[in-house]
Amino acid sequence: MAKRTATRTSLKRELGYLFNPGSVAVIGASGTFGKWGFNVVGRLLKNRRRRDIYPINNKEDQILGLKAYKTVLDVPGPVDLAVMTVPLKSLPEAMEQCVQKGVKTAIVISGGLSETGEDGARVERQVIEIARRGGIRVVGPNCLGHMDTYSGICTVPFLPKVKRGEVAVVSQSGNSSQSVFNHALEMGVGVSKFVSSGNEADLQFEDYLQYLAQDRRTKVILGYVEGLRDGRRFMELAANITKEKPVVILKAGRSDAGARAARSHSAALAGSDVVLDAAFKQCGVIRVDELTELVDVAAALLGQPLPRGRRVGVLTMGGGMAVMTSDILRRSGLELPAFTEKTMGILSSMLSGRWSHGNPVDPAGDFVSYHLLWPMIEDENVDAIVMVGGVGMTSSFAGWSGLPDSMKHEVMDFRKAIEDAEVVEGVEKTKEMIHKYGKPVLFTTMVWGAAQRGKVYDRLRREHMFPYPVPEATARVLSHLVEYSEYLGIARQS
Image 1 (cartoon, helix red, strand yellow):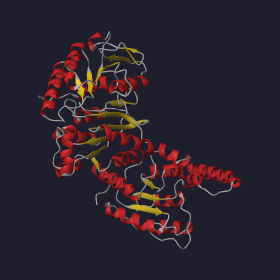
Image 2: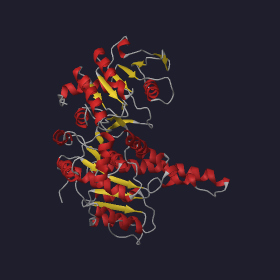
Image 3: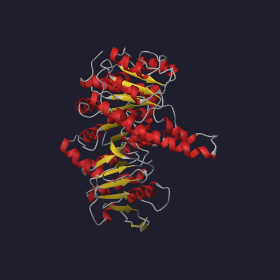
Image 4: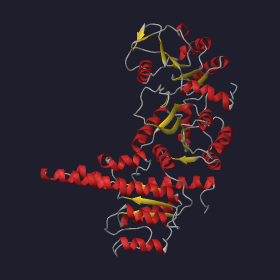
């Protein structure tokens, strides 16, 4: 099957019909709750706006209150996007009718094609050949759908709550993206666009990358990749894009078993992991190993400046955490420099004589406050700061048990007063200093659930400074920031 190439202008126009269609036909729409065709129509109706929606079903007259049509050819108006949920054997005819109708783009959610073997691959080739004859760009097959939070289009039936934002997600796995969205909501990271690319029989990861590079709504591009169809094109695109926008990728299939699973899942061509790793570094792509790490890095890229070196100042709540965090940072290729005499003098004036008198800062029982961060940010020997504990601690007061009823109101009033002061005098002041000195400050707070609620955490979410749950996660993120900064020529090379 011949490869289709697209110019920058044509791709922008073609995918414009995908991410902001004026009309959508659902081929295989259903009135039966739980079926894909029912769920897609329901999702489209939820954010309909001024978009025309046409259910296509040759047995039903009405679906979810909308008039149903026997075929897409019966639709009275133009169709920008067709979403196909029909069985494998019906796909070629459905695509043929889309060509006759003049449909611009299609999403083939149906599976059972090239990912299952030669019989499915033969049908897939037939469907794509028909689409190309009619100039239709195709997402999938074997995919979950797509979304644009600005135009309001969404064809993903099962989607966690998603906040509008500046991060685009392209995933060759549909289900894995659900975990990404759940973590993004927790971290305060919003999404601009999402596409589940599936088998990529026509539109490939590289096409979405090229399109998103031009998208003004997108500041960071995230990708879950099981294999690249056009490695040379990917590298050429990424080398240019990463100079302007970060590209963060989880490349699955590092092991032989993982590579085999990738081929059976999405018919991906999984190349040598060592070669891919080197290629990513050469073109400035940030490679991560976990789904949550995709979001963790995106949050830091949105909310923090890039460090100018590997030197990290550490502030912790206790000695054990200081030792552990120091070891983790060093294993991640980061350094813990000595503070200047000026910084040492300021810290000594603020802490008791028991403090560690060095980096990392262990207050030895004294209260950890943002005031200790500020001289560290100003220190000329420090490029970034990690603070472990001491952030939003009063939020946990809500979960205290054993208090007499007479004290509960006092505790809540105390909590509110402390939270208000921490937001204004702690978070806001720290944010100002982060951008004044161009040094990232990453927080780690090992609490979960209700303890991560309240005004402080809400503000940190909005500022993309939400704490990471363990020092290991913080160190990984900071290491990625440093390497990307070195690639761009901002940070000093060690």
